[in-house]
Every structure is written in structure tokens, then in C-alpha cells.
Image (cartoon, rainbow, N blue to C red; front, side, top):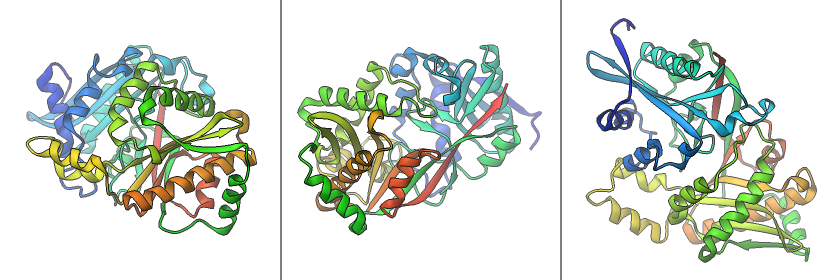
Length: 385
């Protein structure tokens, strides 16, 4: 399609923002694997004043139109915390982002990416990373493998044609992220069971459930471990206290004490594993709205979810223990205890771990040791501006 009849315009006002959110339903209307998000959630994520991400970030959204019909969307954004990170960790000075990318055709895709790049360039950025929607902690990367099955809670989904369109715009892979899936109805291999049993005999080790009645205190413990464990990872950007509170409030309804574990060594919290029931299984039939009956359906589901899939979005071991036998032992123990609860109490049959950086040797080795296999790959692209 010709680019000459395309108009790219910045989102301005509520009607444009609504159209920006609604466009996903047009882009994915023939994709059976797409899970419609809750529109109010997306609006909140994109709105300064509602999402604390904007306490250290700014964004501009763009729409593509042809003959008055919307043919694509994109966000361009700058995260001031990311600008302060060491360049060798993937972020750093001059790095801007684009995301929330969807298009109906290649010409719209090219024009949208160019518009996002122009905005970033005008802001002094010298490099673009994308897609990242909006924070590295939300939906980073383009789905480049695993389009045939739905994403789990808080994971992105994209159409296969986006990859050649992005690469045609001059982008190359900066990092790949993997998710692993496994059948959790089966016990782990004998070697892993022996490692777990050895840990159970070690009086220095305690694996405990989180206490939801002490939600803020537990969140602070997990955040402390997370910042220490992930601090040197590619793409790491610190999470602010406001973001922790915001995310905690959103996740609290799907936080269940037996699915989140903290490992203590000599009484000190040194590792954690967070597991969430796959909320997408409940969201899919709601088609983006809680009205008129969605609230009741969701609240009923949240009382005691029965799900096929559990997702492990976050797991961490403090830096001083990483690459040690103790680290993998604690990981296997937490995984096993959560596996048992997921099967017995929630009827789950499948687990998904991720995302995991492709060069995170420790986590990739743990995933492979419990007989899990890569089911989705996400690629974060980069280009000099």
C-alpha cells in the first residue's frame, strides 16, 4: 500500500486515546490466540497521573490513518531512570523506547516507527529500543516464536508479520527473552527430588509462604531481593516505591499465599518465587469489559481460581548466592512446593516460567533441569537514531 495517503498524527485528547486503545480489537480480530485486555486497565497504564511510571517517564502516542480509518498505533517514550543505567546493561544515556505497536500493513508500520523515532530524536535520543510497552517490567519485546497459543497473564502477543516490518525499518536484535512451559502434573526427575530432600534436612533453610495480611512488608522483602538479584541484568531499571504500590494493588486479587514463597537462610530472606494463576483464562471471554456481568464473573473466579496454567513472572536469589549450589537448591525447593499447591489446590496442569534472558545461564539451566521447554521467544530490537 502507498504511504502517500497515510496520515500520522499524535494522540490528542480522550477520543484519540480511546481510539488508540480500541485499535487492538481491529488489529487482532482474526487472531484466536489474542487475549483482549481490560480497556480500563490499558487506559490507566497510558495515563500520566494514574500510572506512576510517568513519575520518571514521558510519552507520546501516535495513530496512523488512511482515508480516515485507523491503520496503526505506536508509543514513543523516554524513561529517565533507564537513562541513568550503565550502557553495558542495555539501557543508558541516549536510549529511548517505542512500544504499543500494532499495524494493519507494512506502510503504516514503517510510518509509525519513523514518527516514534522522530519524536525520540527531537528529545535528544540517539538509540531506540522496541517494542517495550511501556516499562521493561510490563511487556518487553516482540513475540517472534509461539504465535499459535495465547499469552499468559502480563505477557505480550503480536502478529507474525510485525517481525519483518520492524526488521525492514533497520532494526536488529538487542536481546531475546524466553518463556518455558512444563507439565506440572509430573514429579521432577530423581536428581532434582534428591536435591529438594537434602534441602529439607538442612536446618538453615526455611521455605515459607508469604503472609498476605502483611502485604506491604512482604512486598518490601521481595523488592529488596529483586533489586539485588536482578541489578546487574540486561535491561534492569529500578522499580520505584510508587510503582511497587501501584503494581501491588493491581496484583493483590491474584496473589495467593501458597503460590508465592520466600526462602530464608539462617533466618534471612535470600530468595523468592512469585507465581500467578493465569488471569488471561478468565479475561478472554470478557472481551475487554467488566460490564454488564464481567465483574461478577471475575470476582467469582478470583475467590478460588481453577486454572490450567500458572505463570512464574519473577524469581530471584540474592547476588552473593548466585552461581552457588545453594541458589539452585532453594530454587528447586520453591518450585516444587508451589508445583504441589498449584496442582492440588487450583487444578493446574501447566506451568510457564518467564520471561528469562537468553544469557541467564543459571535460570535457563534450572528450567531445563525440570524438563521444561521453550514455548515463546520475545525479541527486543535496537537501532541507532
